[in-house]
Picture 1 (cartoon, helix red, strand yellow):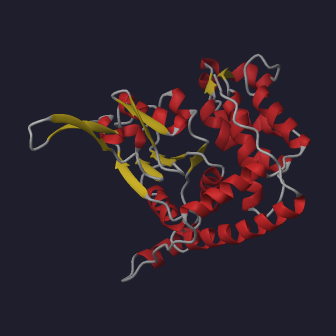
Picture 2: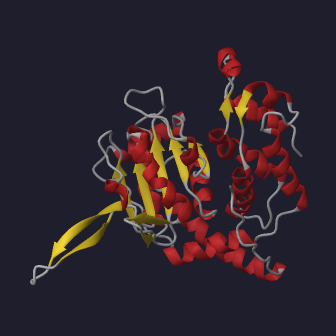
Picture 3: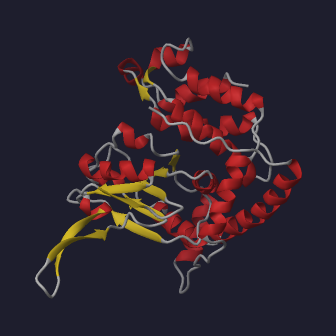
Length: 336
């Protein structure tokens, strides 16, 4: 069951404009420092930053060697966040992520348990190659990604704020990978597909990363400032036409909705959490691009990264060679 978030109040236009202009300057500095280290991949950087500005988590999917890990490291530095990295492997255990209790003994011989925090207690957690760990270990992140705390031995331990998970994933066709549970996929605000760089970007990579020196990111903002921008995003007004487009898109992606593509090719579709994700991300994308309110174009642009990991193809669709992206493209054409 999806819990309703507290309703955010909208701010007067002049206040929004002043706050947005200040936020735009900070976002521009973040983009600039990221651009000194990550070449090309503008859409990947945009979608990942939008997911963070919207207060969520992102799953970066691509073959090894496309600088997914480098991007996450760079964002941690640029945003001024306390970042930690976990290398997911088949023998990784849940306690290696959330922590565990150890027994201490004082001078009198009295024994007691003490909780030793795991690497999940960070503002930015890089879950590197998350699908190389077993489903049991992957599920250790479920509570932290949704509820922003972990429970160990019946005790609640709150995570730092802000808390973001940026996970990298290799294609499932590769050896030694496990599919992520559907419940965990739904925790990710976006699935960001990382493709090969174009010729110009790859040429720049060769010239600037194989010499005697290499560019390094610098901090552009800090964690409190990021939280202020995230709060501003949630207070940006959303036109009724955009809200209607979000509802029409998400509801049409469910089988039985009456849309031919979904009814024919989709086994199960996105729930209300997808609508919530779109509602927040269209605001963040508008601010990222220097606009004070989102448009239907933002809904179209974010449809694929927000919906593709929340849908499953039917057996008939897989047999016909239809992909989830094909279905989303057809749904996207019909909104607005």
